[in-house]
Image (cartoon, rainbow, N blue to C red; front, side, top):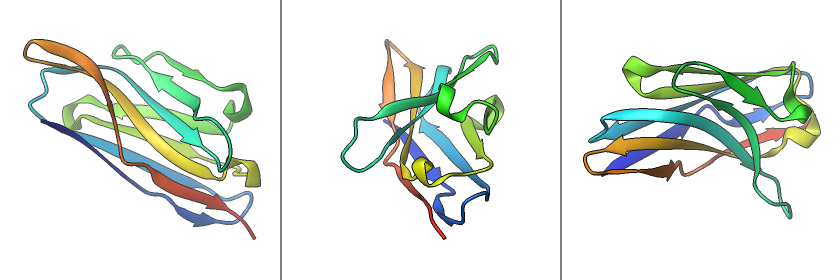
Length: 119
């Protein structure tokens, strides 16, 4: 079994910052790409940022220059530092990890954490 547990969401004022964490646990051999997605009410889930096993990153245009994705391989954890937050960043944020276990490699999802940007 593999579990992804997210934390760090909450209510923040426009212009503020939050840091999300997602820790993977279970019978994990290695983790390939780790990513953050988000889903706002009435909208489709969208990719926010990815980080490969080697550390290369990519970002949605809407968050470039404001968000930073990082990972700590020893802890099987991925982070999303969010700065200069805007109301349009309000969404449920989900982490996604491509995890190699004995005999299988597939994507796993976290349960989601709510981020609300409002004054």
